[in-house]
Length: 419
Image (cartoon, rainbow, N blue to C red; front, side, top):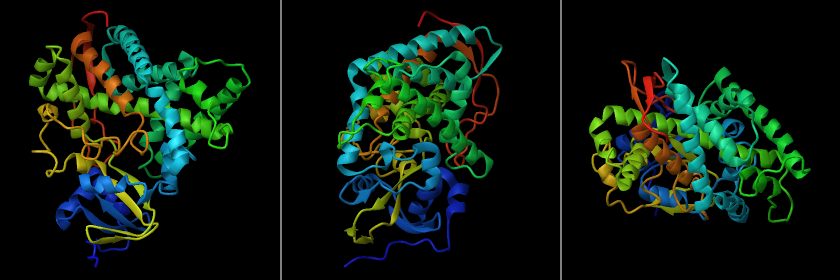
């Protein structure tokens, strides 16, 4: 026997999703007193779910699939066509191994070294400016670092335009009208540029180091033993560059947390590595990043006496799961100590998705995010002194992705030491 799933009345609630943003699913989970409910989004029947148990089901490859689940506007901006996020089964596992091969300790250490070098250069530039708009400057710094780490040759003259294009991809997915088309056009430009570069790698005109994404993705062969078509290879290189630039969102919130919680800064100044990791994890849990992720029901099944029908569009509540009072004590309080004895559940803490890295759809770049944030936290604690003048530091729970309204303006930047 199955129960009737809580149901949101109405023809379509896409506009409600856009109006409520990060809180859309969580608001209804609270009103229905249920971790799962049915609604209509994007003109289709949809199921929304959240919480640890829901995440465990959502990342079960026997129950959900990713192929054809992402709305076209997402594929045309964030994911690209035929990217690893759209695959299932052995094809996904094989492609994911290509990404995970970049996450070796040596390669992550190489990234950390690059980020520290870029922060050193950035500190010199900032010290000569009257003021700095943090979000914009960090994006450019991360674009340089991402290209160096990925083996993508880019001139300084190209950095501004490439940064703007990579930013537009992840900022336009939830946008409407011109802002959305800005993201589509940006993706088309960068894909075309990288397709030409991949052809040059394959022809021997460019020889990136073997440990880089450009080399590995250009030479990667699928299960049939064939090279990826150049369009897909370009999409996957972007799936390295774009997420690294998007870490600028977390870094903005990291600096905001240091400002709003000065007692945390004092603890971090002791240099205790464990506490720095706890602080970073709480930034990732507490502040909004991306609100939800989509999949399709793979086959009919029953969960908690609710019937899930094949091909039903389903959304998992990322933000709401990270603020679930059943999982987190006082979830709306910023408290790094909650991670002191945290067990590391792959389903209860999901700012970048859940499940297994190798076999599942958890973001391969999560380790990259953490390493970049570690280096960046050290920079803002020990690398520079700066002032934060009065400004609008509030952030929206509707705009996706969310950043502080002022993009955090800092002044009087002075180097403390060589970084």
